[in-house]
Length: 150
Picture 1 (spheres, rainbow, N blue to C red):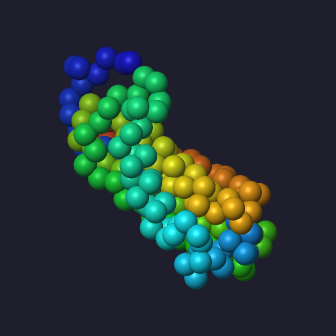
Picture 2 (cartoon, one colour):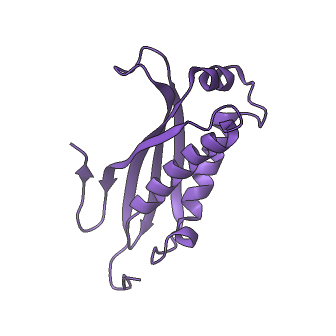
Picture 3 (cartoon, rainbow, N blue to C red):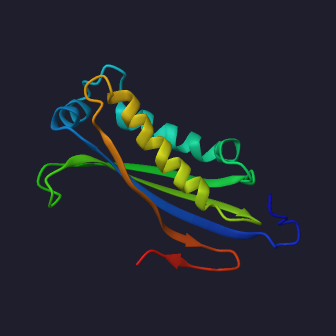
């Protein structure tokens, strides 16, 4: 791990996003609450937050952080909203910490775990779902300050 002991504590935030493309059949089941495993979006939100908290257990050399903010938003992407006609769920994870090192990995892990949870809960209907476009969109704080994706 990188030695951060001499770095000052600063407030840091990060936001990551990603999507899972699903069949119209899965989207209908998620929207109507008819997925056998339960409330897909509710469970995925909780899983994303839990993923944020466990990032240092999953990624070698990642510092354990005292998370001060973790918010997972999941929005259905309905027919006609995308140029390619695909439907799915768009996830956004916003994280925060006051500490010596960044929180980008936690945001990326959280959004990934939320999307993997959607896959797990819906795979009995269709295993052809596709997780895509997971990336950092904003990072603020620390030595490098503000960074946003163009």
